[in-house]
Image (cartoon, rainbow, N blue to C red; front, top):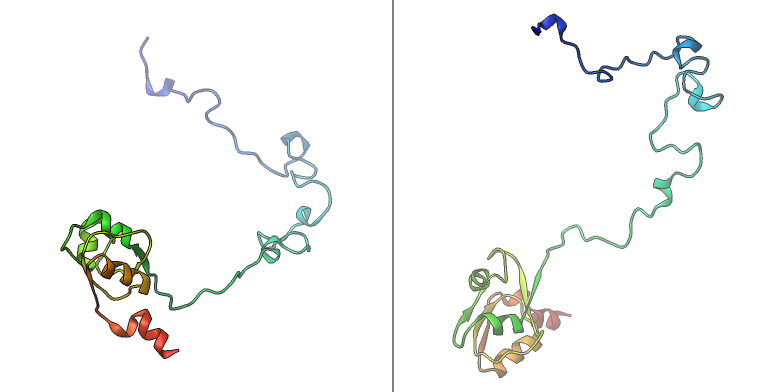
Length: 163
């Protein structure tokens, strides 16, 4: 048997005729045309918001829109604990933003971070940071290291003096 273009036909059921609404009862969508009986949705020209719920208090209005306060000029600061320095640095190393990026504690050197006193430290390090907690500074000095605060006006100790 030779296959010709005029013999080709789509598989059965793949080409469905579109439903013609409002063309009598024999069409399958007669009388009410699939809109049900009475009500706003059965009328012509109905036009309302997609979240309209029939005049009841809408769900969007019942949910709390604002919880708390979000500062418009918030600057995210990442926390770095002294135990992380103890695990990743050796005695005599210098710790700054570039060194923290190199060991994977920060993603970018421009990212703001603060050195906190979480955990213990036994290595003596030279730490050069902009923000450090007084407890972290005490732990580093007690371990034989030194701390240099690069930008003194942003340090916690200067803020405490201003208040």
